[in-house]
Amino acid sequence: MATNIDPDEIVKQVTDRIAESYPDVDRARIASLATEELEKISDAKVTDYFTVLTERAVRSRLSP
Image (cartoon, rainbow, N blue to C red; front, side):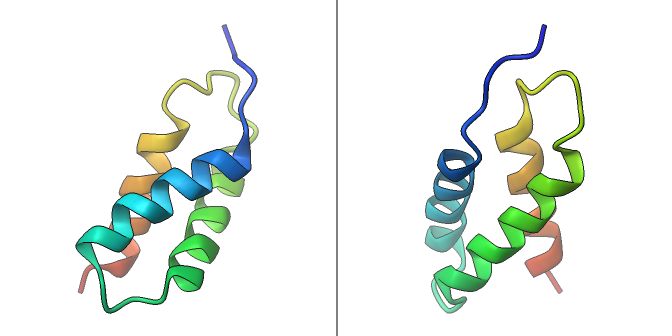
């Protein structure tokens, strides 16, 4: 069953966690990437893993 999500909170959580690992990357860039990645999966019926999926996608984009 899908749950209500707060996209702003997901972006904030992802940004906070990734900023710890990538201190040289601007937080605004991380937030922008998180927003983009979250939008890609926003039509999914099951939202339980949005935060972890968004974080993984952003980390992948930031990794060389």
